[in-house]
Length: 362
Figure: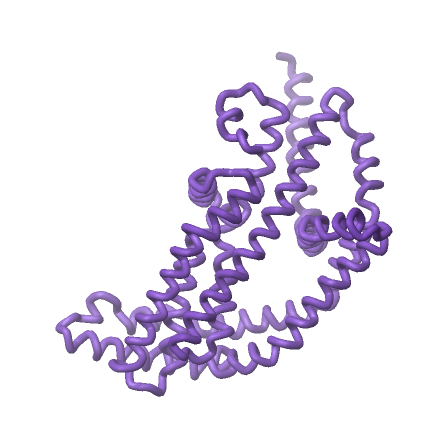
């Protein structure tokens, strides 16, 4: 190997690294736009079945179907905001989530009451769970930062909402034109397989996101029912927050149960601990566990296995494996990514033994 070839190889490697660095830098700078695009893509996948229904069944023109679909979405969001925002604000205020000193005092009071209650049964609370160490370890000052961040997000919500709506409208309206332009760039030898993969993936992902919304709604209703049965204050906001945590498979529900238990105790801080707080909290935990059993054994298998054409055990293993490799973010995107990869594999390597086994229903 001559020095010239070696120098060229080094320069090429340096150039590739610089190009990768610049690409990552540009992606970081336009991260907000990328978020808008991702949200728009998800909305498009959810909205496409309704647009197609309006066009095929009700004979709407393409633009009219898109406008009608987005108008329905806007009306639903506006209705949710007008109906539930005052309730959410009122319940958040009652939970003292915006009053850091009150939150800390309530946590300390509940912790001390729990310690006294367990001491009646000769259980050392401090040996199991050192309250003072935990309390000192919690940085309550971070909560105002989180709240300020949420306020900033809400402040920019109008810009983000308009941007997402704008992107979604034009992609929905002209998706066939964009798709035809995209097909021109595809290699002729692989064009047909790529097009089939995209169409199948789009259909499955639309069903998946619709299924996810249905699953979260069912969990929210069941959580709310449990909290209302046991007359828990702030039931709506607790049920809403815990249902949103269900977006994180398996880990999210566990966090939600612990979160609900803590908020139930804090919400009933002025009642008797041994006769009211403990019993109500235990009932809520049992109720939430039953909701999760219903969700895991009925809702998820029916909704997700049908929407993605995958076996429930298959979905479970994929979420666990991807979660182990990439953490919580991996768990959230595991199912849609796996669904797309299955479709691609079936088109490009259909004779592979494992692909045949995993794509029987795809």
